Amino acid sequence: MIGTSLPQYIFIRISILCLQYTTPICLVLLLALIALKGTEEISSWASKVVIGYGILDALYALFIYYPYNRRLKQAAKHPPALSPAERRKLFIRCHNNIPDIASYLRKWFLNAPQSDIRKDNVREFISWAFFDKDVGHETAAELEELDEYLAVIEHRIGYQLRPGRGKAESLRLTLDNIEVRYRSVVWYFMIGIVDLATHFLLFRQGFQYYAQPKPYSYSVIPLRLQSLFTEKRSISQLSYWYRPHTARDKLPLVFLHGIGIGLWPYLQYLSSLNQGFGEDEQIGIIALEYLPVSTRLTGAPLSQTEFLAQITLLLDEHGWDQFAVLGHSYGTALATHMIKSPSLSPRIQSIVLVDPVCILLHLPDVAYNFTRRKPRRANEYQLWYFASTDPGVAHSLGRHFFWKECIAWKEDVKYIMEKPYTIGRSNTTGQSKKSMVRKVVVCLAERDLIVDTSTVLQYLLNKEDWVSADGVPKKNESYSTRQPLSIRQGDYFECNGIEVAWFNGLDHAQIFDSKETSACLATITRDACARG
Image (cartoon, rainbow, N blue to C red):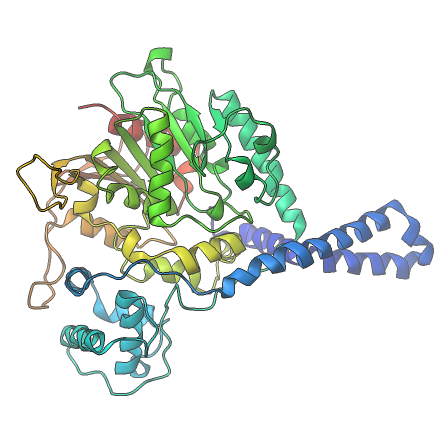
């Protein structure tokens, strides 16, 4: 993530302009050359290149980009609905972990004035958030339940909402229209070059590449040459990089990247993880490639059930019975799927969450900052154009990102879920329970432009919720120990078995940008991978 200086602002605005309007810019230059030097300039090599590129970009837009974007208009297929009891439990838990109810409502309603947020507006929001429905599609029983939640909110804010509907519009991620911005074919040529460079550098570091099965490889744009000629094929639909595990006193690591350009931003960290250690001290790594959020045009992301099935296949293929997980940003949502899985949770002995979007996901910050905030600074423009409005990313978030599946509470992260009881055991309910504790480290950046890290830190270090059972806000005390972070300036906290590394002055994903912070994270990871 770039910074916020004026030169960086100018650079990112020019970059966006050139990528979004490459062909018009080229045509303007061509017309300018013709006007200055005459029609004979059309036969020059420069003019031929411009004309050829214009034709290529037009064909790409006509046959690839716009057909691909038609699916953005398709409705989301929401996961199975929660039972009323499960839904009520989730609502109360979310409600009890809202530090500022006024800010909560205002941001979910896109900073609308308080007078514009009325009863029907809030009903519409609740209908999406907890029922996965548009307003008017609820049953009579669901409407009664919905009004119960509305009354809880009114009790918390301390006044009755005005009846009817105001001008406010709420953020309903999986129902709202999806915003994308055009990027010319040259952008995907650049992604292809970065992809090849990533492949070469990971191969030099001792990683082995497992490509998707051929039918899936052919559906990725830009076409991945390494997928066409590799000897190793993934047993699942997921491509990944594998490094053998030799350290007997460490757990192997599953690495889940965030939204961006794949594994390229993480090369320094992945290199640091085993640097300086002997052949029998190497931590094994499976670095997953999740292409729907990697600036590519590809198929839809896997559902939660499909993802768990596919990653289980490749973990079993390599015989990893126990392992650690590191998730970054969007990857923390995938990690949440894994720790909530009755079959995978017992195998995850340690977890490291970097820039986690999964914690307190019911708050509006992540959804608003990523999809609705109007960019002003350089880093916000980078996030807006190269992530939020990328066709693949926008589709993944707008139609396949379901917050109830991706939210992680402290207890989800900390406690290992036992496998369901089977015949012959004393418990006959067939339900899972939680008992053993895993090692947890959460890394937060002070200036994160997506996650409200100060609120996440407060939540992790508090023993209780922000609101009591009767809906009255509480003043929480912190029950943590605080020590300085070694290697770099920052803070290290520990509270009730959850460790938090706080990185001063860093923005989202910047922990991977420098050699020093990458090495610091590598040290944290190796400590988390220690067995026992």
